[in-house]
Image (cartoon, rainbow, N blue to C red; front, side, top):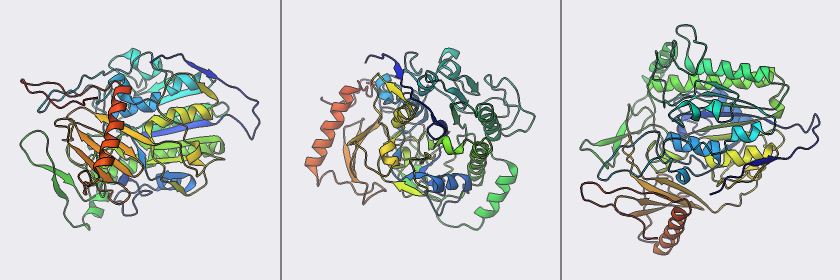
Length: 476
């Protein structure tokens, strides 16, 4: 696939038709049901995110490109399916199971054009804060991928240095250390707000990529105490059985939201979002700033503390079931979105690049997979028939190596160990419990053929032989 760069198209700007600013909030491991805008019964309190949804458009069928972090982050940056670069697992996750995993490229290739590079060529000031996890050394870090400023983005997938979520952070990409006890999400929000204030008279991209709500599970003590009291009034079954593809221990999935520490992490993240949104108002640029809020994969429900429930969605992070790939998507685009609206158009993280580029007048001249979703933001349908997923790995969370295709309301899942398939109608079975594969063989064949053609298009790799045993591979 050739990459021939981008060109920019400039038009006359007036006070009413200025180039829009962009603020992107990317939350790590936040599930679809973890925000009140999507879940009226949510245990976690997210008033700022809820108000953002009330002022813009909420997507009911928004997706991440992969059930784990780095691949989705790649897709947000490039507009491409991560399978094209063999960036199909978190960097560098190489767990084996019955078979060896597919080959993994754990650096975002240096010849990829990021959304920051595309906007920088259009005169934008560009800023990144938080989790990057797209390369192992500095040449792959945000400051070398189009961002003027990088606060905290490097190779690590979590806040694992220093005192982790509390200062001192000892993060090599945070040149100024916080005072002892400072809370990481608030620090990142303050830095983002400072950037907005300093650049309020020019077009900017502020990309706040929270380390929250990824493990380690650590919350502000005041918020933890608040949610412990709230959780004490909740009763019911907290866990249920889930399938297992490696190991001998039973796999459990959380079915009830009541984890006080996780709740504290969600609310602190929400407060940080509120701080940045307030800065847009204080700087007088809210009416010319596109705000996008999303997550890199579904909520963590089957391992590492299993802190959240994604019900009625099945599974969670690390699974190609809806719980692993359907995520919050909220967009406020002044002049385009109407307050308090929602859309059922399927969108995906591959769509961020083309939407921002088109909105800024960037003429994209290289091949990408995403589409400009502004028609959906206006309440119209999108010219899209399918979305695809490819996860040829054994996730830390117990998820199956597999692929998926969504076509209309139907979703087909293909297992990479043995080639079995499942078919679900998401309009009537959002929990993916009623397998229609045996009763709709023609649809299975049609969707499977389309999925296999896509594998060829993106040069998909699959599970590898282990101990003389060969896994299933697609025939065409």
